[in-house]
Amino acid sequence: METSPPGEQNQRGHVPGSRGWRSETWWVLPGIALSCVIWLTSLSQVRLEDMAGLGLLQALPALWYVAFFGLLAVYVAALLSHRAVTRSLALCHVLLVAQLFGTTSLLYDMARLSYTYKHVGVASWFLENSGVDRTIDIYHNFPGFFYLVELVHRTTTVSVLDMARWSQPVLSLVDAAMVFWVAGALTTSRRARYGAALAFTLGDWVGQNYFAPQSLAFPVSLFVLGALLRTVPRGLAGARWELHSRWWRTSLDERAPTISAFWSSWAGTLLIVLVFAYIVVSHQLTPPTLILQTLVVCLFLRPARPWLPVLFIIIEAAWLTQAWSFLTANFRLFDVDVDNAAPPQLDTAAALPGFAVAVWAAPVFMVCMFLLTAAALMRALRRGRLAPLLVPALVALAPGLVLIAQPYGNEAIFRVYLYALPWAATIIATQFVDERTHGAHRPVAAGAGVVVLAALLLTAVYSAELTARVEPSDVAANAWFEGQTAEGSLVLPLSPGYPLRSTADYDEHLASGADEGGTLFRLPGFDESSSSAEDMLSFTQTACEARSQGGRETYLVVGPFSQRYVQLYGTVPTDRYDKYVALLDATFPTMYSLGGSTAYRCG
Image 1: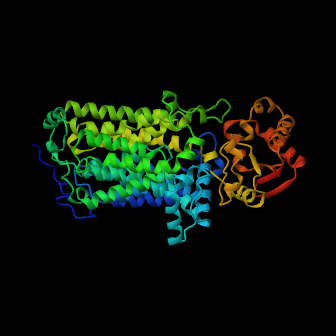
Image 2: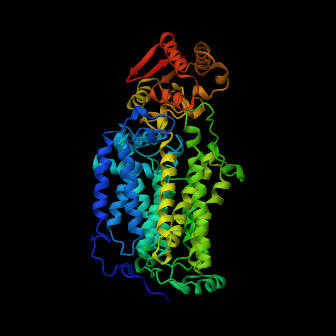
Image 3: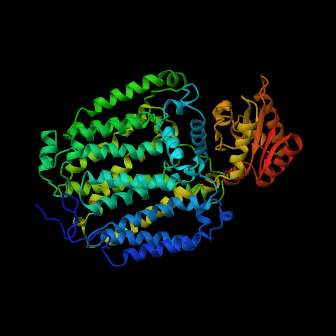
């Protein structure tokens, strides 16, 4: 059996020879501090008005990139060094997340991503009303997240809008912590655990960390899996099947953690069940995904409570019976079809230069992560260490079954990727970061790989920032509509993705905007009418009249978001759009106008 390298953790998580915060190399903490200073300095040089086809990438100054890639160099060098990895890398990861997702929180006045605001509206409803109304929408049938937001607000007085603005960096840190937790259930190597957290953060381009129920349900599901894995005995005793045991015998790992007394106890089991119950009442997709993943663990390993998946199914079924009427009346629950995993279609033919190329960063990134994971598994197979990675690999694959059977829309393929990413990151880290994998070209290969992944990540996250950024005036215009117009009034935004349903009064206007698929630019016939501003106006009048049938007031909303959408995707030429807005001013009564956002009564 191999012996642990000097300075690495033993089974109880102690790092022999390390002294807490003392850096594994003298330059780590100074490197982190220098990167932080450069990053904060660079923020004053950001020119948001320069955003175009490559989004925020064009607005960030050179100093920002120096800070970001410099920090990555420190992080990777510390992971690849022969000295002990200590808690200084936690600071490194915090700063990395701050640079990736805190930059926009500091630069923007409002939370980014327009679809954040429908959750802001639901949270505001819960603050102003007691109980739930299951007839309103899906969120009232899965209200756990919103009750938690209400508790945080009443305890801290932090506003819902502020929570939404800072949710991305905060939830990204929670995600990284939970990946560190999951990896710790598979190995005591602190180097591999930090490597897994780094690989996950660099791989997380999906943007699920915004203010939404699924954004918290995801890391909480990792907590459940990490706790369950901590009840599996070490070595051969933990494998359920004879074939698996034989494979395991060839790859005994002195880094495998010992069984946890707490998580194997009834108190630990009760905590696992309570945490799972929170997920059940908060999000519709995560519980069945988690049930499948726990089934994989219990089928191939021997956790202390192998019947937990059965209990999870009972809890999930009990809650779904409460929401069944709403779900069956409003959603198609099952649809076994590979088309569910088809990527979304995006027309970039007329988009700004660079954007059509930038949108390929995300699929290329997914392919890279798949190839890295496959290479790590092949490397483990050649070294006779595949068996401990079989269960993580199967847990990564399990969510695909849920998403193929459930019509989740074009986002399904991204959800599969997200649910698989923590396990892929752990597999990659155990094979390419752990010091037993040293090779002559390892530092160069690792550095080049991280630079490529980081470049793809920045492109995938920031290239559409023209429409990811939300202005206060757009949110204020929607707040005026929901608060000042008659109940049942309709809103007709120009562009898809306009921030709607952002107040506690959203339930009075549910049959509006995106809920009817009715943004103006996506109504049938718009493309044919977009050849001139006058034709666009005529089309708008017709659309407003159609929506106003039955005596319902209809309002047209125009603002910075619509202007940037037109600019990014080239829906209509900018000069034609400006002329069209001028015609709107002359044709329809202006009911609200502030900061570039205007609401017209058009029917």
